[in-house]
Length: 466
Image (cartoon, rainbow, N blue to C red; front, side):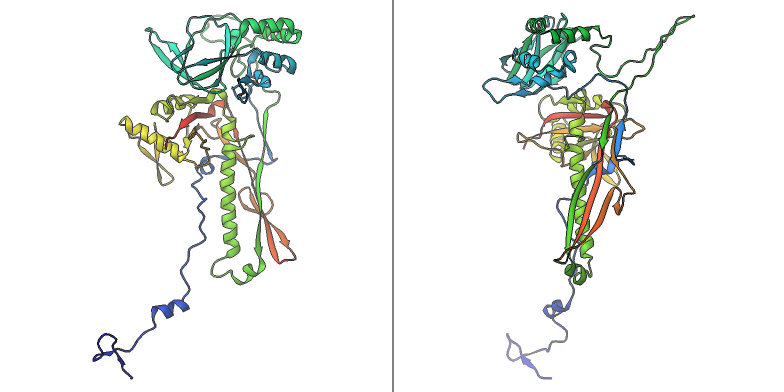
């Protein structure tokens, strides 16, 4: 064996190499690799917690008792000009104008509103005074206060953009039974009852509509048509007759779809499919992206998304901006029948945690499928980054009851579709084109339904801070 000279000590011979160097070995070794990763993947708690209902015909009809509630409970306001103006068609939100079709009269009615400005702390309406005006809060935040038993005042509600008070003063002489005080600078649009009645006298169609409304025994009712019952009686009394009335045109939900065409070159599928299935990995990440979009649509879709389908009476506003324990308790009061979980943006959860820490409150964690998640009053608070955050750093928090048996929120899908790869998701081979590219049509079908309004509550205008 030929000895080599040691580079640092020429008098000492260097020992000969006895094994393969790591540099040489790396050139011959197959690297240990991970499957392809994607940052977009989230926990998708909403998809995991919603009970999914099989919709065989592609359409799900929600039958309910007849109800008088319509719309979103807010009146849209156009603030693009020098003065704010109510959107005439949205005046149909008022019970006395429901189904009124004369656009000219509605336009004239919108023109009768006058703009009023209030500074923070000003009283907009005062308890005990006559309800001679109908008011729409065009911009700002106000507190609704009611007198307590011992002459103290309590905040019973928070009003924000588009909400109104009080519509019944337009048709009847009433007295305000609460006060409204501006929390921030507020712009209010006011319609005087005298102006409203004067327009009705000049417009026969409006007068006839108001007279028909006044003759309706169910006028002014919020919610379902009552079922007449008798209780607590003795002897042979005449019992009331009744029946359960249903909606003539119940809401129907069609399954929505998210689709894409996955393309893979045949050379990749043929030559580079070991040790990792290239087509399978491409398909896996495509399906992950579709599921993320599915959850986004279930929350934000303008037709069936939960944020757009929450009943107006189930929406509340944060009292001070940041989500406080008081706000969460108020939300629980909206969905008090078997609430299952709270859904919030991670930054909203962090903001709520800060508010709890300020008060020395430390909510307990609960176990959810092996995960420790925060809770409030024993209700899990689950993160969801699909809930939007506005430019002013405000967001919403959702609380829901789920399941058909509980008359809650349900997810809709259809299993058993052709080329099904996952429940209600299909992967269909579309062929190979002249460029040797394989195409697969990947489709996911889904929707969501709120079976009764009190199954879903929303805390709006939540300030998340930094």
